[in-house]
Image 1 (cartoon, rainbow, N blue to C red):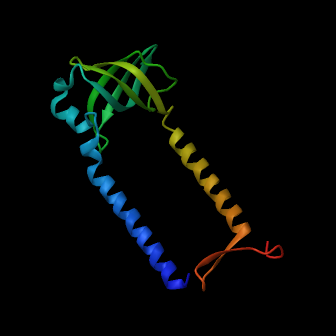
Image 2: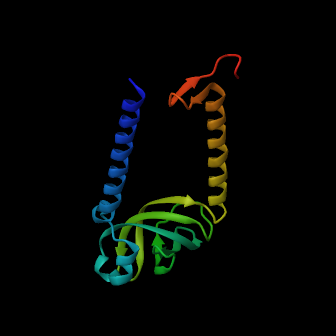
Image 3: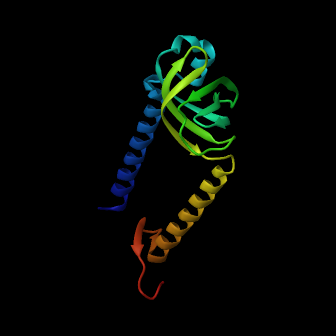
Length: 162
């Protein structure tokens, strides 16, 4: 396969991937089955009795009861929920996902809970570990391979090149 055909094939694959990403981004919210934070802000009572997946920042935990703030895209509080049946190890400032039944008095019976970040410093730890992992993977890759700029190819390194 010559160089131009390879470049054209890569360009078409990249264009197709970008098109799929744009399409996914445009229809994502229309296909989301649960109420969003903005919908909670507009009319919380209309979702009473329905199942919902809620993302929130933990304000307090007391046994199997937690108080969370549901945040919108601008990180503003749109609802304060008291979650009953909460299971998880999280401190105030942590982020959780709760799936359960909403009630008009701004409570929720949780059937499933997932702790996303146990506290407010966990995000930095996750980013740091990801950065170290990416650097190790790139280092290992480039110790065994090199990029041939003229041929636009990835070429294995010879035993003496390492």
